[in-house]
Length: 103
Image 1 (cartoon, helix red, strand yellow):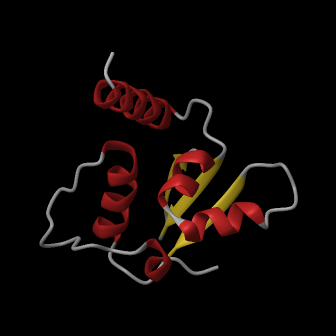
Image 2: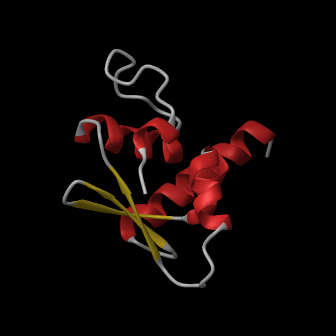
């Protein structure tokens, strides 16, 4: 299996796990909608999430709230982290996670 195929299979498997809530160790709240996620994926994609998890002192499930922007953009951002697909660049042009998140 070449590197590109390996990476694609890994992303597909992690996304399936996320969709079923399997092995997820955090919850991302976008308004009143909650998404299960994996800290490793969020931290690999975003320095903002990485810093949250580094400073997390307890080993427990955590919750992160993203606010300040429309739901569609934020849910697309999570989808992009797991699939590397963007629904519409017009609506999500190079969004930085740090600008979407607040503690």
